[in-house]
Length: 350
Image 1 (cartoon, rainbow, N blue to C red):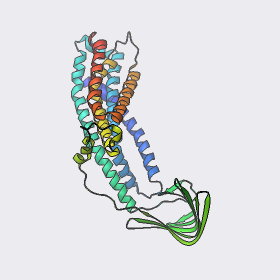
Image 2: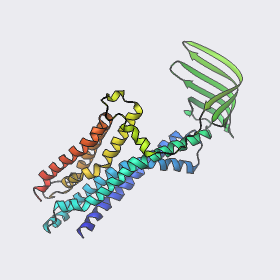
Image 3: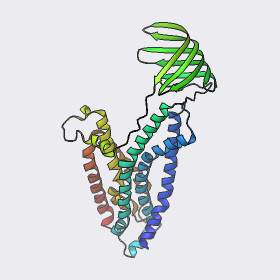
Image 4: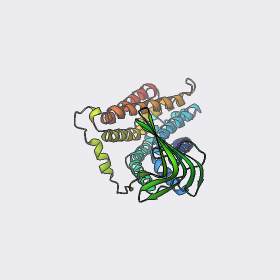
C-alpha cells in the first residue's frame, strides 16, 4: 500500500512534466527542421521522419531531468500536505522511501544509457543518411518575392515561379576575397545523378574583387553544384564509440587531439553523466523532498532547479576539458555530497 501510494504521487507529476517538456522540445525541433528544409520540397512523411530521427536526443535529457524533479516534488508534496508525517508516525523511515524508488531509478538509468549510447547515435546516423538521400534527389522550393532564400552558397531572389521555371532572378554570393552578383531574366533547375544545375538565361554577372568590379553579359549560364551520392552503409556502434578511446592512455594535451576524437569523448562523457543523474541524486531527492511543514517553507522547486543546473554545468565543463575523469569523479563526488546532506538534514532527525 505504501509503495503504491508513493508511485502514484510520483506518476502524477512525472507524466505531466514529461509531456509539457516533450511538447516544447517538439516545437523547437519542428522550427529547426523547417529552417533547414526551407528551400527543399519535402512531403509530410519526410518531415515526420526527420522529426522522429531528432526526437531521441531530446527525450534523453527530458527523461533525466523530469525523473529527478518528479521524485523530489512528489515527496515534497506529501510532506507539505502532512501525509509524510503520518507515514513516519506509522514507522516508515526515509530509507524505506529510498528502497521503494531504487529499482525504478535503476531501470530509468538503464533506459537512459540505451538512449544515449545506442538510440541517439543510430538516429543521428539515420538522419544523416536520410538528408544525403534527399540531397541526391533535391527538389528546390524557391518562393516568389521572398528574401533570404538560400541555394548552396547563393542567396536567391525570384519574381515569379511556375513549374520550376523562374522569372527575374537575382543571385548573390560572398566569400573572404570576392563577391558575385548575378541577374537573369529566366531560369530553371535540373538535377541529374547528384549534379544540381540552375540554368540561367539572358542576364549579367558582376564580380567585385580588390577594389575592382567586372561585368559579364551572357545568354546562357549554368550554376552547378555536385551533391554527391548518399552514404547508406551500415552502422557499427562499437566502431562509432571506439574512436573516443583512441587517445585515452596518451599524455597529449587536449588541444592536440583531433576534433573528431574530442567530439566523441565529449559525447560519451555527456551520455554517461546525464544517464546516471537520477541514481546519483537519490539522496538529494530525500534531502529536498522530506521536510516538516511546521518549521520549513516549501523551497523544493528552487532546490530542484538549482541542483539540476549545477549538475549539468559540471557535466558540460567536464565533457569539454576532462571527459573520462569526469565520468569517474563527478558521480562519485555528487553522490557523496548528496549523502552527507541527507545524513545531516534528514537521517539524524527521522
